[in-house]
Image (tube, rainbow, N blue to C red; front, side, top):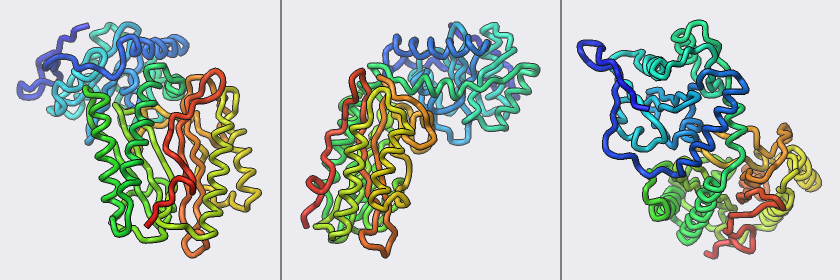
Length: 416
């Protein structure tokens, strides 16, 4: 559907624009894949008797349109009706959102503060939608914007669709799984580049840069039409390994250090990860003991991931191994999570986490990690954080481990 835009605004400046600049870019997935996703969302709309949905999160806009926005203080949206879709983007991005999205696009300018809301109103008005019930994402919609949407559609009921959309994303299509498998492969390549760079005296951030560069080059080779963005490495040493999300520092590696390698290749918003414990030189006796306990948990966890398994039951069984070794209090976080459209600065499929409070049953098409971690505090024998991480694709008969980088003491003691 084409969009016509009123030309009136402040001092003759346009409030809204259509910027079909250039040609549509090749997208990450096929048109049929996007229609499959939108069909699922429209079934949610029908079940909730919604006239339209206003998506506002990174993850949903990306999932349903392939466009991943850059916030920088401006709001974005995707309006989905029973018939079509339109992304609502800021003028600062010009024609790029239209080129890199499935469906139509409308651009709002900065000339008036309320142009973002006006664009959403106009998108619905031009589609003849009388808004009585509108879907929104309460888990990621700022209260200020929610109030403005409510005021713009006075009398309409705003209905949360975030949890239903999240449950739809938990089951991956064949096209998604293909992207995720490439991501796991690229993460392994980053890990090998990092492992080759490890030596006494090199800084954490220098190692991280080497791994990031290796992955970015491979993403560009594998996905030549994609945006190149958001890939990163967390590489930690010594005391800095105590947390899973600690950023690289200028600390220089020393003989005897415990190391943590964390590669995150991002392909078009799709997150994958490789995480491994290593040592620079032979670990001491207690460190080796702790490492092997965590490896035992990891191996058992890999065996437990299969269709029909319940997330909380997996967590409970793995807890018992730590209990037997007196290490449950050292456990740092849940045992794994879903993969797909996620990042350290946006969404996560919280309904598919391997934790004690999640009763989701694993199904074919789900993609989850196994990533046990324990931390021993500084000053105690074996101090440091121990973590392994593999990605598994659940299938009809079990699960396929798509991470190939070796783990444990037999693979990751770096001679010095």
